Length: 361
Image (cartoon, rainbow, N blue to C red):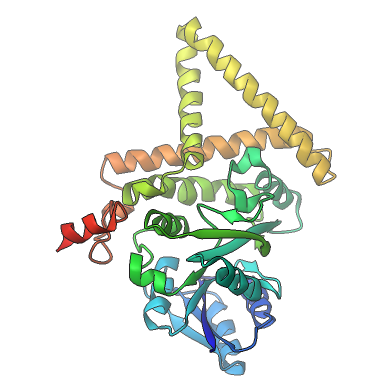
């Protein structure tokens, strides 16, 4: 019996990367009796992204280009979940490219484990040939930088709390609902935690590799942390408390401690010495991590530059988390301005399903 897969690529102004992404998808090894449809959902690009996608669609009958009026990734994914006919949904990102065995390994892993969602690991590539692009790569490929985010590090095959992108059994969306359209960021993490909270399983296979291009310089990288990634970590906790993760909150604690220590330590020795001890330990770990990355990437300058970069990464991400929490407390967070995207998409929807059913009947 044949298997069908809906491949979904949400795009918005990705003219730099979309060719490489589509070309890598077209090179996928397709197992016997597997049919794939490639959906490219454009969120209103103002560059050549949609024109490039349409050019590919004119040459390949299984490429479908559609508009995504909601603009964000969650909306694009939900369009294909509703309209697609596949047995599986493979969510990809235009900012990445994929080995030829990507689809085959996803399908084999899903069939072998029975997991509701499977995925692999990020192989982080610099977003350019310049020095800062390589610094961003070094920052995001060490445990000191990204914490216990296994899919960014050396991982073993195992059940996981999340995986990048994802190869989903289509039936899971009938059971737990769609992607949350209130979340501009972190929608993947939320749905993976929702799967787990609903007694499903997410599986990580490190043989499945995603080659991801990071930001091309430190300014863009840090700006993304402050404006997008970190605040949505906080918004995620409000929308979906079951998706709380310590690694997403620790930078907020760190930034609060740094600011509190700087303000209060001049007034109290009881604050000054613990503050200096903690900052000294942080500096030691940052230098050690920088040394390891300098060796790994064969660049001795990292030993002197990366400690400060690590600090800015953690501190600015923490500031973003604090801003997100403050916006939630003042009811100005964007997720609080949107209605639930479908019946039952409440904050406690996965705690447990039967209670939610009773609440919304």
